[in-house]
Length: 317
Image 1 (tube, rainbow, N blue to C red):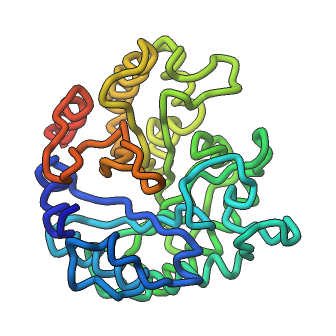
Image 2: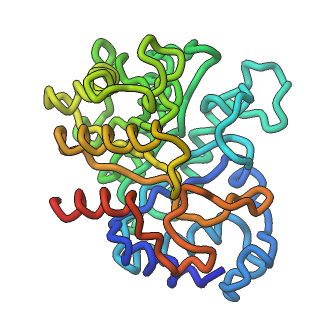
């Protein structure tokens, strides 16, 4: 474990200029005192509550010149994302009390306001990623329903700071932005909208072409264009590929195929990206994070095929 400033400097050494910083709604509603063991290298954070720690981390990142996009990641404070319908969308009160953490849309928006009121005067807090990987059971999340909620939340946040970018992910685990063709998100300040897609090797499951790890480049590109690339290629709206990732050691030929196809397409459309994830350990059970970009000491850099692809792209920017 390292001081947060050391971690921020590690991020800069890797070449990244921004961090997508997630929070859970339960963190906001309960705002617990954080276990001292979890902030052991940050003596000034011992005894503080969760929102204070979130603010301190954000402040350190921005003091080091790193832009921050705050992300509402999940409702219940746990690992994301599983099959639990209680965490699949921004609100779950329609499930009639079966969820451990019940939340209405208005509570979701108020949580956002509680978090972001701390950052209205920090110019390097540049945006809000409204909700991670909105999804329904077997593709049942209507785009228009999510678009309407995103507008209500986004406009409330823009009233706090009109300079923030409002990031709206696609439905079905951020894979699908096709709905924006006919029903685009419309904010009170139009040029603050950024759509976001997530692209992993296992994405594409259930489709005719199968998972992206199995695709030829032509099939992969066709799917990207259909689901979100049309927004960039047609100069309709900006798209941030907010999550990509691959293991240090590819588990299969499919992992390698996905990674090569991904970077070929990102280069063709000049898309910006975010990598999941930096941390060397998963938060639950201290299990090793195979997608990490740093060693267990949070200082040693994992400079492998993944960083080679990302550095080459970042140098072209």
